[in-house]
Length: 257
Length: 169
Image (tube, rainbow over all chains, first blue to last red):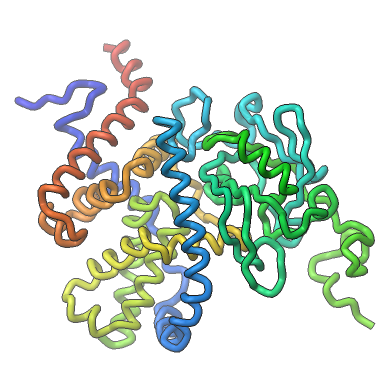
């Protein structure tokens, strides 16, 4: 009776309330086992042989990249004061998550039209290259959650075969409404792709100059609205002689007789 | 621990642990990834794992460390840039939960870990201290700062609802 909680300002009650809320949250998000225990054990056994090799190769570069990205997140976070990392910058709604695509369209300063391979912002329109139909770029209203001027990207990731690493420039991480991520990045290794063909592993690629410009314009929390679907494979440009018509699933790769 | 015992333990503890790790990471895929990885490591290092005497706590510790580690960042990065990450199979939190998740995410990692371990996983302040390798006083400070920040954020979000309550009264 002595510590009656003031309405609106939960103090003494917050401990119990917090525990209860956390429990509920955790319970709601319990995940059933995705693979049987036997599979876990199998992985552990397989791990022994390969551990050093794979971690050294994949971990080192990517970890470096992420450390950089995260450093930028932290810097940016301080600059923008109380703006939550995943919330919309300049939006007055209290909801910390970005509203779905049917939300306030006036807020989406940047629009990416995958069908037209075009990004529009501030009266300019910049050509882009997306993931195409094989590895489609996610769509919806996204927020810029991290920026890095330069960071290594695994090559297979962004659409380069062979698995070697490329340096990504002007990298902007986007968080999708359903809490996934994709990136805006300069396609330094394929400047012809933006506007012409869709070549990435799902990221949105820009020409270097455009990417740099956009990088300087966009702040953490900026909203990027990604709409449409990538057009079918272009005729000719790719040089692989794939039929231009939209083929059924998986039929294209076996160019038979 | 026989293979069957491990499998049983895994089946029982995995869901609970992913829930706890979700509270810590705010991300489903990540929570699942790190818990799964922790189980793989547990089997890989059975001796160490069993010697500890508290298997679930061992897994949780490893999973939390993974969640703040480069391993997770590296893996996540690869996954995200490479291809679409695995589908998030949950409908996503309701508005109230979203506020809590958002508020948790804004806490610095150390505070978030202290809050989750103490308030969700029922560890004492001393246990949290030994778990995180920080002095007891530091843990207390983290807890109180974390709680205050959460209360502030949740209070802000509540204001709309509270106001309506006031009107009724």
